[in-house]
Image (cartoon, rainbow, N blue to C red):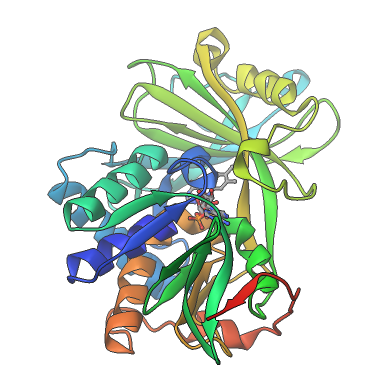
Length: 357
Ligand SMILES: Cc1cc2nc3c(=O)[nH]c(=O)nc-3n(C[C@H](O)[C@H](O)[C@H](O)COP(=O)(O)OP(=O)(O)OC[C@H]3O[C@@H](n4cnc5c(N)ncnc54)[C@H](O)[C@@H]3O)c2cc1C
């Protein structure tokens, strides 16, 4: 999502852009995330302006592209899922939730919360970038081309592909690029999700819950009914090693069964609905929890845009806009990126994969 958004904004300003994807567009977290958007949930943090600008751009993009990716405003609730022995419910749950759910309050209104179908959004932004002249190349980037201190392109499966600027936006795999250039560490945090075919049975109401499952683990399931007649539920995080490629990411043993049990407790509609996808993916995270967006010190011509953690779909539009400004103008107008400067964190070098030319 981050790469396609940067490509869109660069191409919209007339730059020649090539997006390189090793698998298929939206094969990783960007295709398997919740796609939930909040205007003000990052207020009071360094992400505030990025999030608010992104929330506004999401609406603008959806208007321009006629709802191609299921953008819609939602009402959002928060509560707890009680064990069946403590089913006496406080508060009034929306009618599609089970009596075991106690809603404690409204976390967002249609003024402040919204959603997209993230795989459709990522693919739609790629198509929109292509319509503005961008090119999509499928292949694996295995190194950077260097001339002295400058980065002048990438090694794409043995082919030298030159460019004036290179943006590393490889999600949790961005950490691999420390083999090519010293970079702050980037990690992957795994999450599991199910997608149900619920038709029109659930209104546009997002729900954030807390609960304890049968294993005694505290979980925080998130439920997002979507405009395309599906409902997405995610929960159960873990930190196994990041597989070498997105195609190798599989759910942890037992995680999907635990999630199914949880979903059946959350809503009888989920219990009765066909499951369309059972999946896992890794969100990109950094040492201090903030994204890495900006020029890479020691690699003139190279930029980093990753580490968006739980807000990568929300914050993609303003990230794309700002990185395009940084590359084309040398500075940003809409959002100040200084809190996300890669130079704030210590860089590590893994020391392989640079090609001199
Ligand atoms: C369970 C879950 C739920 C989430 N829900 C939300 C939500 O509701 N709202 C929200 O805003 N965010 C959410 N997120 C976070 C969001 O999904 C991520 O922050 C975002 O998708 C990261 O996008 P990305 O483009 O940085 O990375 P990715 O989506 O991982 O994309 C990186 C791409 O780089 C490619 N790549 C990697 N290495 C190479 C290489 N060497 N050569 C070529 N290509 C390469 C990969 O194939 C991949 O397609 C969620 C995350 C998880 C895990």
